[in-house]
Length: 354
Image (cartoon, rainbow, N blue to C red; front, side, top):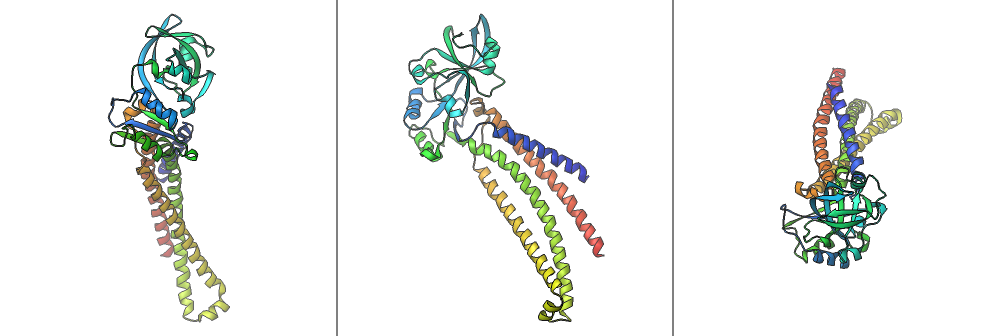
């Protein structure tokens, strides 16, 4: 039974490691999400949002619609995304070919389009597509670049949001603490245009990403804590045995005589006490650290399902669900494994003492 539980716990730790690695590569560092609490909420006009982008801090947004577009005399289903020129800079996306559309292109509503890698290959069969045209709603858009947006499932086409007569309601900001762009500063600036925490979720994506990774380390702290408990129990048994022997010696010797005649016995008892105290201190630190982590986890906010349609946040949403599931399963299975080990140790100790 112990072997089965150990194998299950080890498998969960391996899954945890994979989730941690994948999340760490997600590129959520210093990103702050603002999204409505209710799906399909009314958005804000682009001009208002761009004023913040120009004067306060760098932000971006996505206005997503499903479209049929034409390229090379063929029709394709795509995700048409209206956004602004700071999009790749905020999200840290790299251009594979060409560049993203500029501020001037956005201001003048230029008919430019950027494709993601999947869109480029499935539409044109190549990344070398600069200057080609895509017909969107019957209007020709000139391809100016190919972006690596990390989306391997959808053909994404990016155009200036000013070309769409729509509003945006979900935003991502790049926090920059060194230059005063903190979470609180961003919240206050959004409040100036009516975006507040009553109607909007404001979520630190960097913090959520770090929490996923922290839970991996918390799982290791639980393993270490279990090992410390077993070591502490062994140390206490040694200490009790040493104390019992010393008690017998005190019947025949004064303390100064013991120190002179049997220093090893006194040193052994003192050493056992120090080891037990150190183990108890280590256990207290581990419990306190896990408790502090858990408090932070509860204050991070939660990605709602409808908010994951934008910015490829479905990945982070899924990783959060997987992490919570794996963490809960690991605690249950490892607790059962630890209790079985503890029972075996206690039974063996009782047999030895008998």
